[in-house]
Image (cartoon, rainbow, N blue to C red; front, side):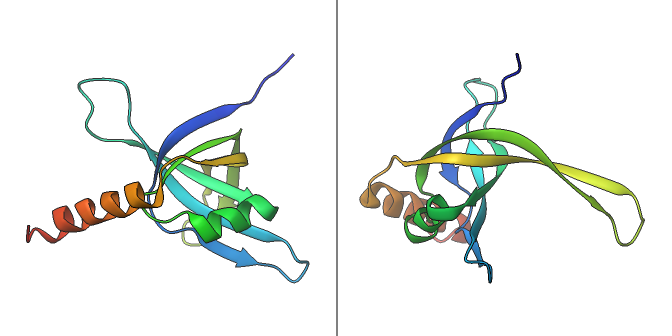
Length: 123
């Protein structure tokens, strides 16, 4: 028996990148920042998410940079050949089956405003 299930809770690293295909399919991609439970780690782990279909439409409409979300899916690897070097490359991707919107709109807006102030260095 084998099992490939990934469950993560974190904040969207950017607004979703949405692609609509002629076939009617919808694909949504973005990164998710997940904090570790370790006291020594201030840096989050970053995960690439890939979402298809109606769940992708929900993500496109409701997920924004800083949104607190939960995802469940499976780990897969995308493979490609580097055009410059010809070397085969790969990256891990979470193929999301379930998306949970965990934070309220107000929570997301507050999180975005906090990071905007931190990034600008003006506040």
